[in-house]
Image (cartoon, rainbow over all chains, first blue to last red; front, side, top):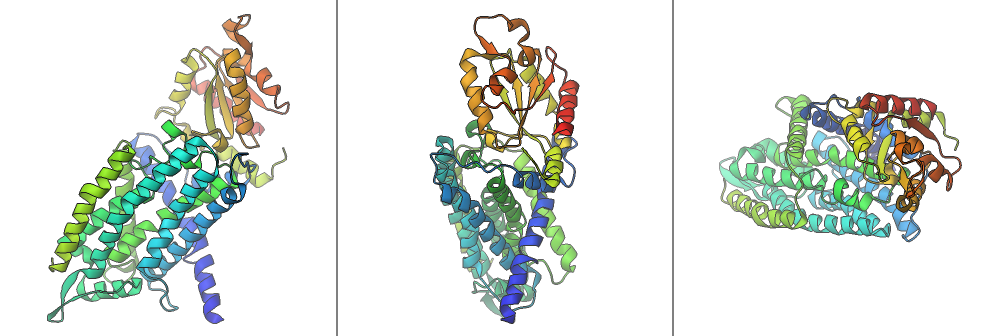
Length: 321
Length: 146
């Protein structure tokens, strides 16, 4: 019973729902502000993402007539719940919080796939042709980036490092286990294979967040927000919150698997925060300096060069590089 | 429609706009685009141009409403979730301007929208075209009234 209360606290308050949402909204303000600065604008005030969400919560709920109402309304909540659970597991492991180990890389990988699945189903449930186009693009994009992402994450698991006069690899899927191995043998990213894998995973997470150049599922100038087209008011707010939580989660996935986690030596939490901000600003700059790609270009990019680099990284990792 | 105070406050800080051109001459549309440019940057007030009426709070309408645009404008208006308001940009949207007695127009935008939603609220920004400063002033005034 105690364990249940503890995990409910983790899920609902810290580092789950309340914390992840607050941090995600703050980070999405950083995103918008940096974007504005890049475009030589002043940008929105810090509380802007918060007011956006509150405003959406106060609006009327509209359900399209031709749609599947139950799915249309439930899926945004499924997306939010899954992303918050992924955030809880990752932050819990990355900060080394007490309460035992729960969840591993495979669980997190699948939890992080649920939000895009919810967007796909939600877009299809809206009954709108543009929503269907957005959903189909999102589905293809998910197929494209999940393969290289999975291979890149395996580099963190199988990388061979000299350890105590012998060679060893983490060979575990537990998040805490990966961090413990990196504490002993050094961060995965310090080796060439780790660096390549981090680059691959970075690009895949960029696509997972739906940032330009991989925003073709939302593409507001051509298919009018795509899968989210028919969403308005509170359900849309849930999707906005999901995006914010993912923004606070995916960089932590990269830092946990490749870069030695958030806490711990050297530099402790400050260094961890620095890593997160570095990854986030890199994402925002990539986002602002690239035009949107077509879906066939995205597929060719992810299944071609990106998967190739991921496989090379995996081979190098097994050879001890 | 009654709105709780916190939501009203949020609405004033984050009005998302959807732009509808009802067969205008494109002059007002250019000035609307100017508002989003670095020089005027309406994102300072939380204004965001969105691609779907479902996401919008304020509809920006430019141009006299032609016969062909009458039904699409009414349907787009009904697709916006409440609370909603419209900003009529330019003299054509406000009162049809030079097209007043033309054979092809269905009426000014406010009359066309009131045919389907008598409670609709409008703010008029006349001019041919209005300056970006005027549009921003109109938007701020509209938000104060919501």
